Length: 177
Ligand code: IMP
Ligand code: MG
Image 1 (tube, rainbow, N blue to C red):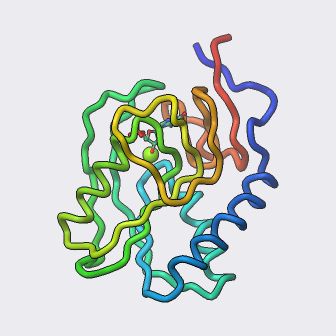
Image 2: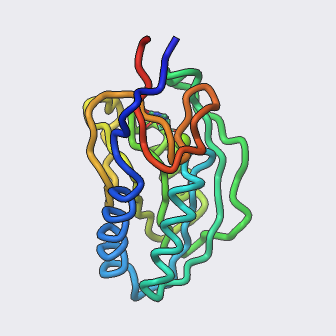
Image 3: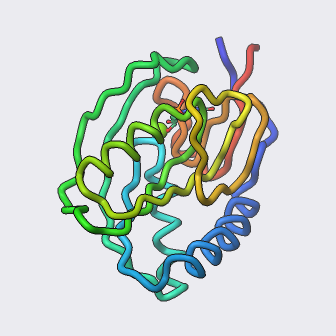
């Protein structure tokens, strides 16, 4: 059994501050073209919502859609990725920014990048709240990273453990009791 650790790994305020900085970088690089933000469900719903509100403050008003990709079972990736929902927006010829909660093995990001390129996106950029480089199996990086963390299983701010804790406004760690 895994249990939620008492202390946050990253607080709500720390997330806010770091995302503000990250969005300044995104705005600097991408403001000259129309942007389509594609969030990867389910984990990125909170991150994507806050991301687009910060883009709004920076006077960037993207089109927004989601794809639903799943691979996880408990704390272990099953390795097999499934596309449960495609986006509805047309991405052909577009500048797309993928938003995901965490870059772990890299399989999900690689899958999403390949999928969007297949659909004809002209340029595919990516931003993630968290990066766990120690776990990487596929050589992929994100263009914008909120926090680089150690190999711990995190929950909250959209991330779950067996479907739970997505609602936490901060990032916590689950560990053996
Ligand atoms: P990857 O395909 O292994 O890079 O995994 C990416 C996806 O796995 C993320 O979008 C998350 O939904 C999930 N994931 C990876 N690490 C964690 C974690 O520490 N906590 C919760 N979900 C995770
Ligand atoms: Mg996810």
